[in-house]
Amino acid sequence: MAPRTKILSLLLLLNFYVAAAQFFINYAATDSCQRPTEYYNFANLRCDTCTGADSQTSTGGFSCACQSGFELTADIGSSQVTCAACAAPTPVTSADGWACVSCGTGTSLDPVTGRCTPCPAGQIAVERTTNGTQTSQHDCVACEGDTVPNAAGDRCVRCHQSFIDVSGSCTCPDPNQVHGGICFTDAQIGVSQNLDFTWDSDTKLSYYIEEYLLAASLGCTPATGATDAQRNLTACQLLGNLCVLRLYNRQNDGTNQEDGCTLLQALSDDNNDNVGTVQDWKVAMPWLYYNHLLNDVSEILSDTEITTKFTFTAASQSSKLDLVVAAYSLNGDFLGIQDVTGGLLQVGQWL
Image (cartoon, rainbow, N blue to C red; front, side, top):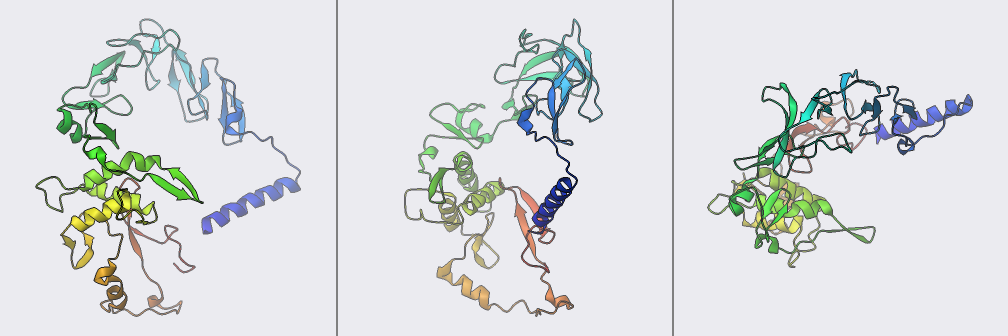
């Protein structure tokens, strides 16, 4: 809450001085800049014009970029750029904008856009050699050996093993389906999922859960013949996060509807390998629940193994709890052990 208070104070102070001095600025939203050569100057909160006759608004709308058929010759990080015209036999602007190329294998010049046509499915655009040397051509190269184009379409990467297991290639043919980058068989898709959230008495479909619930559940399930510890750790943490997003609600227990919480609990119940003596914390999985049947809560509350005594005296070293947390991103990546001070978790004045 402290950072928010400071920001609000700054805004109020700025508004006071502007009003007192009777200074006024025209309001311009980021979508106010409509002309092809206008960009939004976020330093001055207004629409400015690209000065070069060969420049235009960048894709993001906050600076200028060279027009199609021009290459960058100078870009110092300001809103303006310096460009030079491309000429035959390399009339097309390269992908990074710093060179001119011709349209080579698998592509051709699009007279409307002035760019090379997109590469066909399963191919990537190549303009540099493996050591980074700029080439004079924009070529399309097919991805081979169980690889597919990455999201940017400029590098071949290995496809997920699930695709290879299902089809022997990087395809996921019908009736199989892709969820969260994993190819699921028709039998695996058969699980009935609860993908809805209830918010202010209104039910909403969660597209994130729709995309990743099955992938997280499958990844957290050990393969046939594997041990409980041989699970995808990131997938298990993602599944735990999908349960936390539902506020730990297990309303679907005992029904045919599956959600992050019911799936996580089912996998936990099937996991016979505990972390130390904690029966509710299973290896390779997050610990979200206390099992009331085992009286874990009462045991923890009455445990006396921590012998340190804490006081409420500000000057005393024993008045402060040094709290740390294990942090994970939404998709399950481990972010490390972090101190909760500094705003990560603000509980009180002295924390």
